Image 1 (cartoon, rainbow, N blue to C red):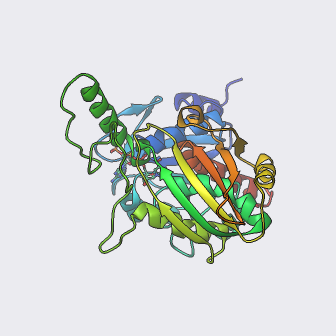
Image 2: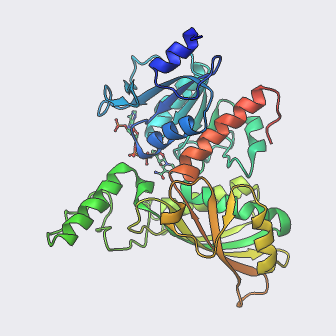
Image 3: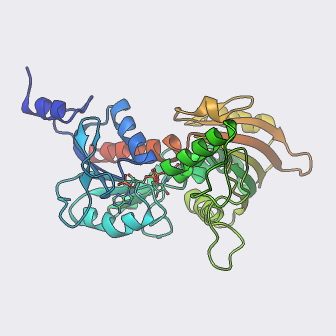
Length: 352
Ligand SMILES: NC(=O)c1ccc[n+]([C@@H]2O[C@H](COP(=O)([O-])OP(=O)(O)OC[C@H]3O[C@@H](n4cnc5c(N)ncnc54)[C@H](OP(=O)(O)O)[C@@H]3O)[C@@H](O)[C@H]2O)c1
């Protein structure tokens, strides 16, 4: 028998929804992360009674999966949402997230707007879900490069303590959004067809057949990029240890999806490569491989770790190579996992 809820779910194109589920707002639904969040809500059969899509005037009125994208402006109805998943840039989050919270929603924000706020938990679902217990309506999702690093390093930090990290990232262009993917493809196409590459717009240099040794932007007077600062700050906040040294170089490479990281981990207690492998073999969300690659990790939710080896230059250091899909675990998957954990908490299952 078809119930009114079933009918509404069918009208909204929602596979896997069940009666009494959540009302979910997806802000930035037309973007690289937003579209991935919509796929994940469907794939994971998130118990959504209704999903409402929001974006700017650029794409309001367009259709995604049979739903019409709503304009997020002062006329938008923000009432009655249980969860609002934000991925529309820090400015949009600063302007609109608290308005959703005031109307009763819990906001899970992918932008950098609130990550440094001590009152806002910064959560990786496998690492510090206990931090959700102290949220006041706002929860921040970490930066994509930090996210995958934390999944790989938290088991090591818990076991032997991390003293210092030296990380170099190889970040894909989808980390900068859909326009950056189009920029890479346009430049690559032109170059392969003997034409002049279109001038760079998103990045300061062409990204096709190139490597840009400073991913992110430089704030006034800073010799580190904002991406590098995010990894330094967020690592310490998530691992709840201000003493961890973090040296990082963020690099943009001409890869569509998946960030890779070369990581040197200096531990407090001794840790052999074999012990590191054992710790990570049993770690949630981690898959061990010889040499993970972006093309193999794309579309997957796990963090792939390989090349675990002793650093022969230091008595307490190991090296590793960490790859993960920045749109999935680096953003959308973690946001949906947090929404699932919140649901579990409400149902009486303690978070963490
Ligand atoms: N890409 C990643 O790997 C990644 C990982 C972690 C976190 N993040 C964060 O997630 C956010 C989105 O990134 P993205 O890569 O998905 O970017 P994107 O592909 O450029 O998409 C941006 C989205 O935001 C919407 N938007 C922009 N301004 C808006 C406004 N004033 N009101 C409502 N919607 C607005 C856009 O809507 P229109 O279609 O109307 O323009 C679009 O849906 C950023 O804060 C980013 O830092 C991204």
